[in-house]
Length: 202
Ligand SMILES: N[C@@H](CCC(=O)N[C@@H](CS)C(=O)NCC(=O)O)C(=O)O
Image 1: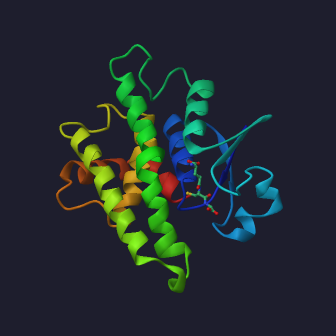
Image 2: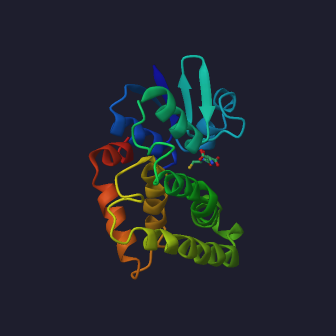
C-alpha cells in the first residue's frame, strides 16, 4: 500500500493529484501544516527537514515531489503520463518537469515566507518584490510554451502535475499577469480536472 505523508495547500497535493489521475490506491497521513506536526520527531524521522511530501511504499521511503512522481510512474504504471525516452517530446517533458522546482518554486517559496510564514515585523518588502518579479519572469516562457497547446507537451503528462501545480500556486500569489493568456487558460484547464480538484480538497 502507498502511504502519502501530506499537508493541505502544499506540494504534497501534486502527489495526490498524480495518484488520482492514475487511479492508484493510497492512504493519506494528513498532517496540519504546523510545526507541531511537521517538525515532530515522528515526521523528522521520515524527512530530516520535516517537510512534505514523503511517500512510503512497503519498505521504500522517498521524499522530493519530483522524485516521488518519477518513482510512482516507474514502479506503478506501464509508462503512463510520460513520453517514451526516444520520443521527440521527451526532452521537452524533462525540461518542463524540472523547470518547476528549479525555476518557479524558488521565488514561490520566498513569497510564501515573506507574506504568510514570517510575522509582519520580520517581513522584507525588498526580498518580496524581487521574488515577485523573478516569478513573473520565470512564468513568461511557460506562457509562450503553451501557445496552441492544451498542456505543456500537447497531451497531459506528469510535467503538468509538477509545473501545472506550481502555476496554480503562482496565480494564487498574484504573479500571473493579465497578458499571460495561454497560462491563464492552462491554469483553468488544469484546475478543472477532477483529479486536481480531489487533490485540492484533500
Ligand atoms: N523540493 C521539495 C520541497 C519540499 C517542501 O519544502 N515542502 C514544503 C511544503 S510545500 C514544506 O514541507 N514546508 C514545511 C516547512 O518548511 O517547514 C519537494 O519538491 O518535495
